[in-house]
Amino acid sequence: MEIKFADRLQKLPPYLFARLEELTEAKRAEGVDIIDFGIGDPDLPTPEPIVKAVQDAVAKPENHPYSSSAGEFYLRKAVADWYKVRFGVDVDPRKEVCITIGSKEAIANICKAFVNAGEKVISPDPAYPVYAAGAAVLSDAIPVKVPLRAENGFLLDTAECPTDAKMLYLNYPNNPTGAVCDLDYLKSVMQWCKDTDTIFCYDNAYSEMCFDGYLAPSALEAGRDVIEFGSLSKTFNMTGYRIGYAVGDERLIAGLKKVKSQIDSGAPMFIQEAAAYALGMYKGRKLPDIITENMEVYAQRREILVKGLREMGFDVPMPKATFYVWFDCGMDSMKFTEKMLNLGLVFTPGVGFGDAGQGYVRVALTQPSERILEALERMKESGL
Ligand SMILES: Cc1ncc(COP(=O)(O)O)c(C=O)c1O
Image (cartoon, rainbow, N blue to C red; front, side):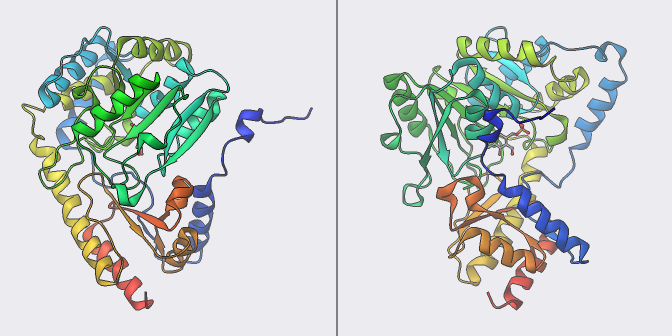
């Protein structure tokens, strides 16, 4: 029997990161000391009290069965309480919140709920690849990539977006550019979406990874015509726990729940219990100490890296949020990345996030300061 992938799988773009992984493995096999700045996965551990909360929760037999695909009510309530404390927004945990198995699945599943085959889905370019691939292509929709331009602070310009799309994905603080936006900008995008009948999906996965006193807004502060995705992954160094949330318009939440009810059975209850504990650490609008301490580590790394790259002549913006440094490498981004790999340094080529990322490189601040200094030294010695 011949086994062929479905057409939609064949439409997925080539996965450039897989080639990078192969090249990295080859270097490692040669015995090269690899310093990996590639993946957006915190190297810092989950804060101790949260680990303890998971341990306590997993020991309880009542946490061993299936959950519900929409999540346990107490966690939906904890998310709603957190929205009130952190953003000053009231949401109904019964209708306006859904717990997700990390935000990635929900970002993809929302498209299945509302977009028909052949309809357009707007994705920024460069962007987290899931919007165009996992969401649009795997829903048989047509991804329309709209460039984020440096001269516009990497903010999507809705004037460049098609007005006949079904859905728009937007993400600030932004992966991969590190760009941030303000509430007025979110209001203007929400208005555009209303005017053009486009479903607004806001990815706020990095809302808590902020520096220098900046605090990212929620799109729900701009109004209710949106579904927002959030995650405990980056905020609490919990990427492997797979826990997130979607909050917003009850019809959009209902659609997401309906899709999820057919394909998953919810996040593990012991993780949900720990997630509720983690969100409960917020006592006001500002970040709890545990996150501030985390962000201080990233801030210090960010300064070392940005300063070092600037000294080598690169024009590197100091990101106000996320743990990514994004800069113009002055050449083809894959070529630059391969050059770096010869020095044992794994950077991510901007073009892996879309054509508009060509000429750029993303560096994740997921290595200790000493390793960042070592990487800068290797770059300097190579004559860059
Ligand atoms: C922009 C963005 N959104 C969403 C996610 C998904 O995170 P998770 O599924 O761990 O919540 C990521 C992960 O890197 C991301 O960069």
